[in-house]
Image (tube, rainbow, N blue to C red; front, side, top):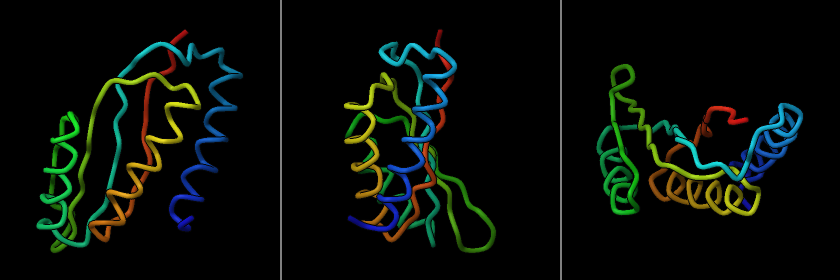
Amino acid sequence: MSTQLEFQLAAWAEQLKQRQELNDSLSTPRQLDHFFTFEDKKSADQAAITLSQRNFEVSVSKKGIFKAELSATHVSDLQDETVKPLITQMVAIAEQHSAEYDGFGAAVES
């Protein structure tokens, strides 16, 4: 398991705990926004194609002179058995394109 994947799974465990304390309805589908940082726009554009093929809405923007940021949006529930494979998939895509997966954000649904 990569360091990046270890970190993201640990971050999810903490987020899951916080969401449970907030009585988040984890089975309720909601918009998830995933974030990546790339060393160059070309790599971000290539990852965007991969994510688009997996039915994510994707946006790529420049960050500074060379780097690029990618956001990928889709609808999903936040049950642990859904999120862990999703994080694994996102980290794999990031690592395939020499990028950092910066995690995801989603609203709390009660």
